[in-house]
Amino acid sequence: MPQPEFGVIFDVDGVLIDSYGAHLKTWQICCQRHGRECTEAQFAAGFGRTSREVIRETWPNPPSDAEIAAFDEEKEILYRELVANDFPLMPGARELIKALHAQAVPMAIGSSGPPKNVELAVEKLEAKDIIRTVITGRDVVNGKPHPDVFLKGAQGMGIDPSRCIVLEDAPPGIEAALAAGAKCLGIVSRGHQWDDLKRAHERVMDDLRQVTPELLQRIMGS
Image (cartoon, rainbow, N blue to C red; front, side, top):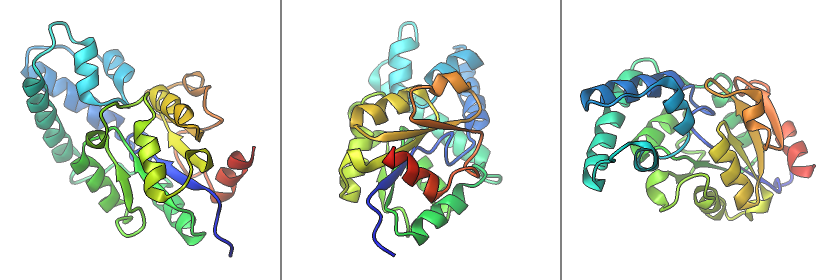
């Protein structure tokens, strides 16, 4: 079988992991501990971006960088505790990764999440030996909607960004993919509406069971 001429970059939250509920609960618990409020609408508006950017841009009287870092660490430790025993893998995620690997399609991770969260997801997906290029929010200065995380992902695979297709579930991630010059498949997962992802080249509902290597290749060729 000839080597495919495209690569795939996965976001993690909302694409490979159905993590919306766990992240919402984590934000709300930690905000309450620190005397702040986090409604679901506020959480959904920032889902898919780095915590530090959400806090700096939306919190009244935002804390110092050191305080943000401490809050973020507290929040992510709690998140991993919540999902440790029942990890919310997105339906079809493991199967899609295996199908792409069987066709020798290069894959990368491009996530706003912290490294330990992404590492845990890759481990649960049984993909540590398959997806070797992993870019997280700690690897870039500018998070989504800036294209940095996807540009680095493409570079890690040795593929031009224009020959990559990004799987994303949030508007900032879709804008980042387009800014990188990549194609984008929108996954309309919990917390988003069909029209929220209208900038993607194509959209599917809820999970990855509808996604095949052939669908991704067709989008790349469109």
